[in-house]
Picture (cartoon, rainbow, N blue to C red):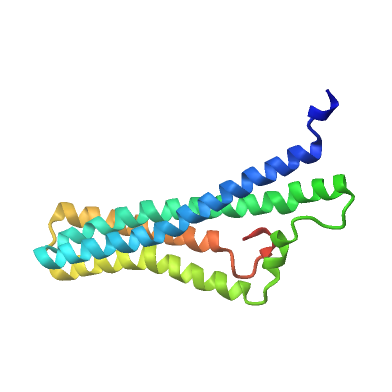
Length: 184
């Protein structure tokens, strides 16, 4: 039954649609992580202020590190999908269709002259949401003078974890001095 044969082009288009659907889902999930983080930060700060217990601020670093890491992982997968389309699927389908170019949006949006500044601003926002806020919470905890030895040790480990996340945020952003053709 030749009418039911699957062509390579159909397979490539099906793969394209599948990865674009995954990319769209990941974008929504990633973007919602910022809102979730802001909500949790506001709730912890409000509860801390109401209870007048600075130790409650120690909840910020683990929450922000987990949500920040999840944000980064999803952001990297979104970029990886874009790279896969630009570097693998697009060229294969272009050759197969004997076309000049396919999936032009996958490269067109990357040529905006303000792209680098947007990436730098997004890096700053990510650092603020996932790293600066929990570090500020730790500073408030330390300055409040209500520390105990065990919680002090815990807070130092939390500071190290947040610092590690901050390093990863900057490394994943890649907006400065690198070839931006591989980053979304």
